[in-house]
Structure formats: structure tokens, C-alpha cells
Image (tube, rainbow, N blue to C red; front, side):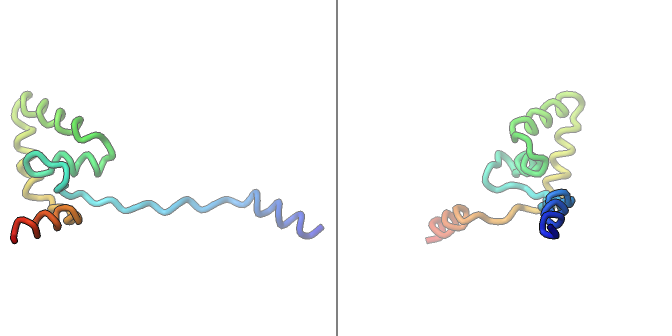
Length: 95
């Protein structure tokens, strides 16, 4: 009888939420057109890269804020970690 209460207590016990993965903003090397800013923002906010690119174009056409924001992010945000494919391609080009 004591085990029945412990099973019920275990079922009703609150569960701990899963730990959140820490996200970092970086310029993406894989899916870049100019410097990887839009791709990095897309990965950070978990939205499609094309939407971020369209937003930058719209802000550029509405007064030039898109170009300024892109330039600031280009210099302020670090380049992302090198992927194995990038490392392989770089080694092939050196030889």
C-alpha cells in the first residue's frame, strides 16, 4: 500500500523543464551571400533566411536603414565556427 502512494506521488510530481540551449549570434559561413549577416540572424531567431533578406531590402528602400544595419552587424558580429566542409575546401585550395 505504501508503494501505491509513492507511484501516485511520482506521477503527480512536477517535472523540471528541459534546459534551454544557449544561442549565440554569429555570421553564418555556409548560407551567405555577402557576409552572412542575414543567415546568422535567421538561424538565431529560427526564421527563414529569405525573410531576413527581404526585411533588409525593405528597410533599405524605405530610407537606407537596411544598409546601415547590415554594415554595423557585419563589423560587430563575429564570424561563425568553421564547418568541416569549409575546412576541407580550404585545404584543397591551398594544395
